[in-house]
Amino acid sequence: MGMRRTGFWTVMGMLLLSGCAHQQTLKVDNAEQPYRIGREDVLDVSVWRDAELSRTVPVRPDGFISVPMIGEIQAAGKTPTELAEALKTGLQPYVQEPRVTVIVREVNSTRVFVTGEVANPGAYPLRGRVSLLQAIALAGGFTDFANSDGIVVIRTDGKGGQIPVRYSDLVSPEGENVILRPGDTVVVP
Image 1 (cartoon, rainbow, N blue to C red):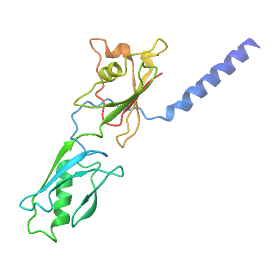
Image 2 (tube, rainbow, N blue to C red):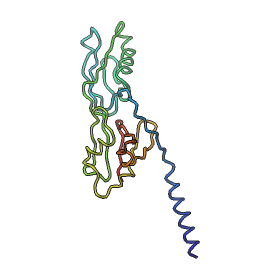
Image 3 (cartoon, one colour):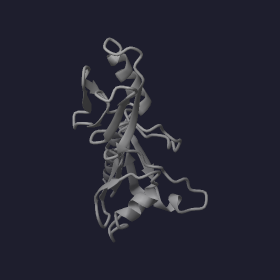
Image 4 (cartoon, one colour):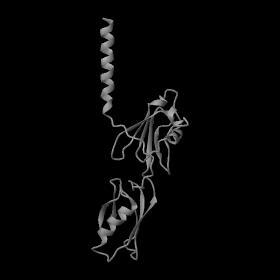
């Protein structure tokens, strides 16, 4: 009877663990990414030799900006160069050979979220390259109940997925740190 019960619980444990296997695990990619405009950023749109069309515009929460003659145009998710090209295309019926430049005046959209067993969970701004270790430090470090070897970084860059991370690997000499991207959520169980 004891063997059956042990076998039953072994099978149940395997089934429960396999139920969590549907989450995609991502390979860590620490390569530099071009800056993508985000919601709440502030942009300087400059049209050469046309002060009436040049202005400072905020990116609204829906990701659009409003520009004279063009109207609404999607800005969030584009690089400044891509947005300048879209604006140039939109202005061509009205302006002869428009030259458009987009400069990001204020970066307000790049945040990471740290939650779980850290001293100060919350949203933290990304200023430059921020590693996972730095984000944990910003959040005040681990609490006494944290499972530091069960950290998960949830990446929402369009591919979705999770990056499991062991703190002991991060602090080892051979360990590779994870560079966080805007929108990442760090979960410390």
